[in-house]
Structure formats: structure tokens, C-alpha cells
Image (tube, rainbow, N blue to C red; front, side, top):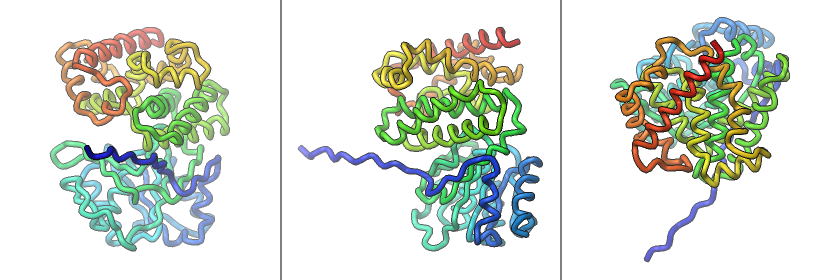
Length: 385
């Protein structure tokens, strides 16, 4: 009988992380600032801040060094268009500034331009960029996706299917966490992003994937969000929340996620924003995994008695996130049995379910989970309305 080959855990992380209000100025201070090409969000407040910072170095954003992403999730057409831009304006340093979709779009565009990625199939043609890889700067303007901590980028193929492209060359050389980007977020929007970060932290810790350093990042992220979410507004509060989001992204990138993300991905097919989808399923995700050894370990690390106590700690963030849910959101359709079955079927096919500590033995377990999600959302929305 052949011996089982055991591998050692590998902890993947960005080479350098600079954090703090005002830290975006490290772009202007970099000796290679004139060689930077910027792929960014089109949000006026963000682009104005970027322009002010670069002005210190005498660098102007213009058509030769700056491209903004169109609204929506990255797709093959948008990735291809950005790749053509990079063909015309080769980057020695590629700076992506925006939410997770912008950070993914920028890296996918480079991979396409370098000939590594086929944007029509989502397949990597090669894992060797040679000397073509620029220095990557990833600067998040939200505090949820954790994309700046990951070596994966997701986009929509021409037929509508999602493709997750994983390569170590997507890992950032520099991450900059400047909390000024969060100042314009409303309470519901901030809470929605943080529910994604909470889900990354909780599910990363509970995950079956054994990367101890990733688990420690998860605990730190969870402690930080719970400690600072309800604190009075201040720059330091936003700094801690943005740092926690990064650490949650580290946990998810190294350890994967679970049932809550499987549900969020399924609901995203019907237009539910990722943060709201995570908020909808988070409390019932805790209960779903409540009897596992991994949950026992998490509660012990947090100094909590049981899952209900953890749920009470998380609930204020969830309630604020759900305050922004639209009347026509697909979440409300979970009351319909046929729709629940469709969502459960999608969840069973989602890769995130594989690393969840409790593997559902049949679709009925997921249907029960989704029924709980619907009841929880209705209950919290009644309380906050």
C-alpha cells in the first residue's frame, strides 16, 4: 500500500503592508512613482484623494497612466479592455485602488496582457510570467472583501459562469490600508462590508483547512471587529476595522470559508450584494456549525460560553447591514420553497461547502439552514424598521 504523503501548511501573505490614516502617501514617496500605472475605482471621492496624494510627487492622473473600472463585477470584456490599456501603457508598477472587484479586475487584466490568462475560458495558459510581472500595489477602499490579501481573482466568463483564477503571482508586493477611504461609507454599507470580514474570520477559523497562522489572523480579525465596531466614530476606529478586514482576508485566503459564503455565492446569482448576503446568513451559519469541535475551539479562544453568546456579539453588525436591504432583494424569496431548493442546490455545488466543518449529508440540512436565514432576516428587519 502506498504511503500517504502529508504536506506542510503554507501561509501566503503580502510582502509588505502599510497601514494608518494618510498612509496612501507612500505611493508619492516611492522612487518609482513616475512608472506607476493606476487601475482604480471611478468613485469621485476616491479618485480625488488619489490625485491629491500624487500631486505631492508632481504626478498627474491622465489617459496614459490611469484607467477606471466600469460598475459591476469584473467580466471578460472589461478584463480584455483593461489588458489592451496595459498593452499600450506597460506598467513597471501596477497600482490597483478600489473595492475587491477593482483589485481582481486589475490583476486579471495584467494576467491577460502578459499572455498568462485566457479571458474567454478563465484558464491559465502558463504559471510563469517570466520578467513581465510588474510590482503590484493593492489598495482597498472598502473593508470587507479582503481581496488585497489573496492570490485569487474572480470574474464572469462570457456565458455568465464565474471563474476563480488562482496564482501566486496575484499576491501583492505592497498593500496600503488608508482609512480615509472609509470615511464616506454610511452605517449600513460599512456594516455590510464588515459582515463579509466577520464571515471570513469565523469561517476561516472553523475551516477544515489546517493553516495555523491563518487561524491566528482570523482570531485577531474577529477580536478587532467586535471591539471597535460600536466604538465612537474616529479615524482610529476606521483604521482598526480596515486592518481587521485585511486579517480576515488573510484567514480566508489561507483557510477558505464555509456554509455562509456558499449561501452568499448562491444568492449573488440573483443580485444580492455580497455583504448583505453574508449578513443574512451569518447568525444561522454560527448555529449550523454550533456542535462542531472547531466551534468549541473558537468559543474557547474568544472566552464565550456558547454559540448564542457569540451570535449576540455579532448581531449589532448584522442588524445594521440588513437595514440597507432592498424590498426586492432575493433574500425575501427564501420564504418560497422552490426558491430555497434552487439556492440549496447551488450551495451543494459551491467549493466553499467543502471546507465547512459540518458537511451537510443531504439537501434537507441546507434547506433547514436557509429557512432559518429567512426567519432571522425577517425578525431583525422587523426590529430595526
